[in-house]
Amino acid sequence: MRNIVLGIIIFCVSACSVSHGNFTVLSNRLVDIKNFHIDTEKKMNNVTGKDVSHIIVFVPTKANPNLNDALNDVFRNTDADVMTDVEITSWHWYIPYIYGQSAWQVKGDALKTRKN
Image 1: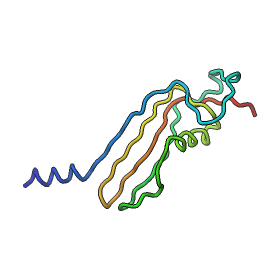
Image 2 (image 1 turned 30 degrees about the horizontal axis):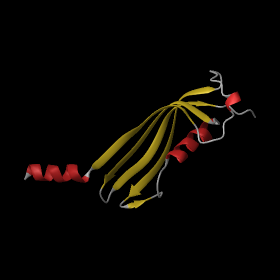
Image 3 (image 1 turned 135 degrees about the horizontal axis):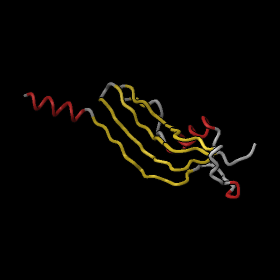
Image 4 (image 1 turned 90 degrees about the horizontal axis):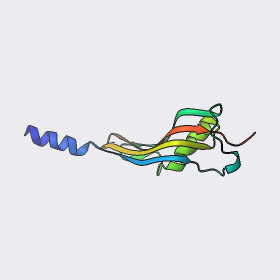
C-alpha cells in the first residue's frame, strides 16, 4: 500500500526542464554589425531574464511564456540589445490543483551596441 501511495504522489508531481542550447550571440532587435564590438566596459556579465507563467489551481496567469519575452526582460533591465554566451532553458512543473510554473530563461552576458 505504501508503494502505491508513493507512486501516485510521484506521478502527480511532475516536472520537466529542457536545455535548448548555448548560443554565441542572441538578440531579437536590429543590430548594426559595424557597432558590434565586445567591449568589457559596456558588457554586463551573468544576467538572467525570465518569462514565467504561474498556474494557480489549473488556471495559468499567462497564456504561453516565450523566449522573446525572456530576452526582452534582460534588455529592459540592462538597457542592452545583444546577449553573448547565452544558455537557454525552459521548465514546467505542476502539483495538480495546487500550483505550478511554466517558464523560459536566458542566462548570459548583455552588451549594448547602440549609441544614445
